[in-house]
Every structure is written in structure tokens, then in C-alpha cells.
Image (cartoon, rainbow, N blue to C red; front, side, top):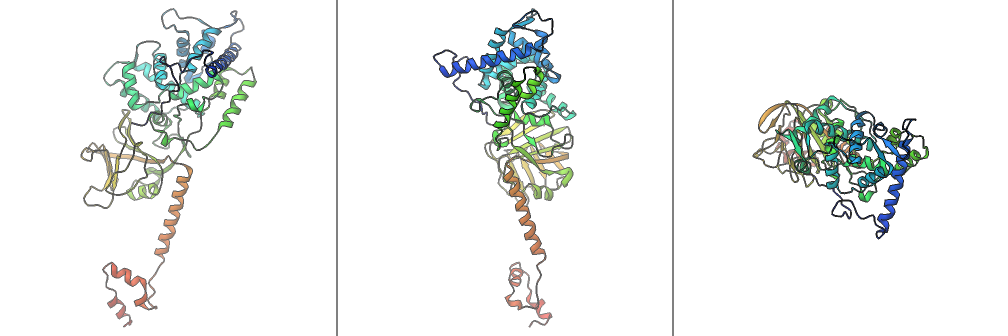
Length: 481
């Protein structure tokens, strides 16, 4: 399993992130600032209320919920219930400024992922002690939409996403009809530890009008794909989001700094008091940019063969994400934190992972050497071996690349993709290495034996003789002796 990256900063036993009392001047000052931000947001939401609103200092339920549009519509309803702390039949139809600020401050102080997990589970289950499959699917769809918004990525949903999200629900529930918090906590610990990271970053940004402080932010951004065209590749945005909830930061860490961009967006969104709540949401929702992934190999474009695979993947000195799609709607992801290499030894370190994305989402194996790629040794089957136990491989791709053995059962390969997750320097270094190899190969191809020179002094003679070829008699027939 990937490393958790959970950051708990001086949280008290209740998980509130510290005391607000004056004896803690920094916390008290922060609390006052948060209260001011929440009151300002409350006032902006009041501007969107109907003209006949006759309850100053209060927001109606409909006004609060109308601030959320499209895929966020359901989330607005659930957040209202959670903030009013009333999930029974007698739903409170109005929320006061005091209740809004108090509930908002409780959310803002949740810096521990364990506390966030419990809060948002109860939010998406509408306060129940369990969640049904419909609740879970709604939770996944909303979490996906909020994370994209927080990452400044336009919302998009395709048929491939429709396959990935139910695969997550199937993984959570198994044969059960309901899911308790304890079961959900156990599932997320292994398969999706950062499932609510984007959700909480989004909510925090909306409520405070600024990006979460770096020392308190749990980073799980959605990777950017270079020249990505939805529908062209095996990878889709839904898969990217799912992977962002489980992958270690070595695959997504950013190499850019966009603090000024976030600051500018935040300040510009608070200057105009007439901004609608939806515009506030779209203006303020920002996260740090994520490391871009570069497409290294696409079997549809480059050809489904081991030689083409090697040509495009070798010499890339960075972590990679390899997708293998085959019959049965199976899509596997091989997350390798070490460069691909050929040989009889397996490779992979602490951040390596083997993940099944569909038809059931789950982390199969993680941590340590997972992959072996043999092209030459006769002692090991030639091809790509995937799995920690060599006697019980999860995947095996023979050297001819015409099938994939899934737990020793042959299946037809549909597609293989490899995405480079390193920095731009890793991609540039690979390009330079390819150019050098091409020039070197071209140099050897144009090289000829010059028989009009002293053959005994020609280095090509010695090279050929080392290879077991007797060249003396051939030269003598040409009159050399």
C-alpha cells in the first residue's frame, strides 16, 4: 500500500486541531480570521437570497442549496444537513449566521485525515451509521467532481468513468448491502486513503477564501496528462482521480510553484461583493499544480510488440504508470517507482504498487520488487512478470505480446500504455539518450571494411576474429597474401 501522507498537526483528542482559547494566541488569532471569512461568505450567500427574504441574519435551506450546481447539487443538500446537525424528519429550514460560523469553523479545523474520514462518511450517509450502495456511488461521484474543481480541472465524465466508479463500490461492499464506518475505514486504509482529500481542500478553500496552509495540507492532486485527449487512451479522468487517492507522492509531487497564481485568484474573487456563490466556488477552488505525466508508450500508436515497448520505455529515469487492458473488462495499473530494466532480477521499491482498476477496484500488492522483465536468459520465461511471488504471478506478458496471462489464464491483450511520472528533466534525458543511440547505430551501419588498407592493422579484423570468424583465407583470395 502507498504511504499515507496523513498530517496531524497538534490535534487534540477530539480531532479539532487545537484549542481556540486566548491562552493559545496563534490559534485564537486564526480562529478570529476564520470567523471573519465565514461571516463574509455568509453575507455573500445572503445576496443570492430571494427578494422576499424576511429573516436577516439567516439563510434559508433553498438559498444555501442553490449555491451548488450540476454535479455538486446533491453535496449542497448533504452539507446543509451536516452543518445544521439535524438529520431526522424535522429538518431545520433555516440556518443562522452563528450556526453557519460555528459549523464552518468545525470543518476548517479538521486537519487530520482520520477526522475528515469520519465527518464526510456521515455527511454522505446523511447522518446514518451505515451507507448503502446508492449513497456510496453518490459519494464517489461528488468527491470526483469536487476534487477536479479543487484542482482547476474542468468537470468531465465518460463511459469509462462509469465503469471505474461502480468498480469502487463493488470493492467496498463485496457481497454486503450496507457498509458501516468501521468497514469503510478499513477499506480506505488499504485502497483509497486520500478519498476525501480533494473534498476537504475544496470545502476549506470555499469557507476561508484562501488555499489551505502548506504545513496543514494533505496533498493528493489529480495528475495532469500531456496532450491528453479524453477517449483516445485507456486512461481516463476517473482513473486519474482514483489513482490520486492511493498513490504515494513520488508519482504526483509538483515541481512548480503557483502561490502567486492562487493569491491573485483569491483576492480577485473577494473584491466584487456581487459575485454569485457559484462564481465564488469556481474562482476560489485552487490546489497546487501537480506533476504532469508524459505518454511514453501507446500500443495503439506505437505498435503492440516488445521491441516497440522497449524502445519507448527504456532509458526513462523516473517512476512510471503502466496500464494493461485485456478481455473481461480488466484494466490493471503497474505503478513502478524505479526505471524499467531488463534482466533476471525484479525491480521496484517501497512506492511500487499493483492496482486493479476494473471490473473491481483494489490494490493487489504494494511495496517492494514487483516486476521482472526478461528478454535473454534461458533460465526464466521470456517476457514481463508482474507479482511478488514468481510461482503465483498476477500478470505475465510473453515476449511476443500477443496475450496476457491473468493468474496463469491466457487472455487477449487490448492495449498497453506507459505514462512517465517523473519531472520534465527525466523526459528530456530520455530523448537525448535516444538521439545518442540513434547516432551511434547510424555510425556503425555506415562503417565499412576498407580492404585497400593494411588488413593486418585493421581493427575490424580483430573484432571479427573475436567473434569466431576466420577472415584470413577470405583476404588471401583477394590477393592480400
